Image (cartoon, rainbow, N blue to C red; front, side, top):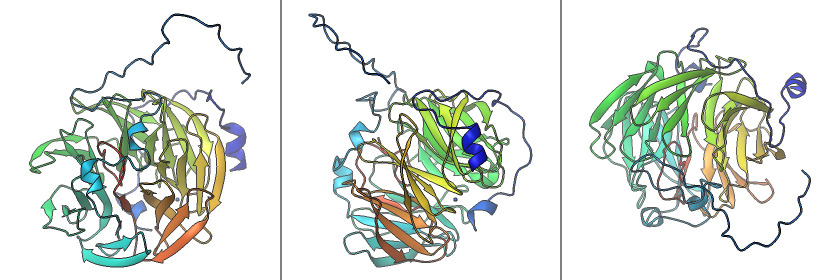
Length: 404
């Protein structure tokens, strides 16, 4: 880690550009699923003027996508307590899928007690909120199904056939549900209401395709390639591959994993487990512009309710880093002694961060005020894509609750 810090130090507001990172070459990749079963100076005040104050240009969004209200904070409509009617109708619960046992366990966040559990397949990876926030889905990549969960009651329904849903996202206009078919190196598109298949996009150069996020305008998606050390950039409207971008170091065991756009839309942060930190991609998804070392097994990225910080988990180091998403500064590092903090989300009021303990059969509840560990809740084998519900926001982009 010391070597990485001296070579790739994070530079606030001006991350150094790292060139030579775009490629369509492939090679050196692990087997699918292997890694998922086992981390300025101040300026004078301007003179008074009678002219109108400048306004931030509106974002030209993907047709059908909700407008960007505040270009300086893409998460402005997902602030504390800002629940949509559908989300407000939900029963506050925490859903913990288990890749080791194929079950979902349900925890009451008021008491920290398990109140239900049910089988949802063979290898259940994530619990994903639907675009309209009216349903949750437990994804089983081995069994090729998703299990619908009614968030108003916590009751679950019959499984729906879906091809290899290791992870799941929704196009920002709500037109498609996207099964991220990791083992098949492709995306499979579905009608999000009928679950009729709409088409497929094969990306053979993207071994270990798993996590995604979208540019501020919703027109471009970036998918990480964990077993190829790169990302795949996809045009949303045409569902075509635009380019492949290699990371400066192509880790192919547990490489690029979670990805999150900064609130101002100017950069993507990409967690790289083997690298032990974040790669920084420019907001147009054209090149890698920097690196931020954090800790071994860097994996999940979650914004605070006011989007002032990002919480970044390192499941091998057993830490959560608190990152300023504008400057890249690490403001604090919270230890989870003997733990493996992995995936989860922030509560609707923003006071708690819930995370699965991937390798320790437990769930962690962390105070966002000071990083103190409020609870360690025992669960089953391989807790993974934990979903805290409800979440604020107008619509869901999927995963464990990426809302805007």
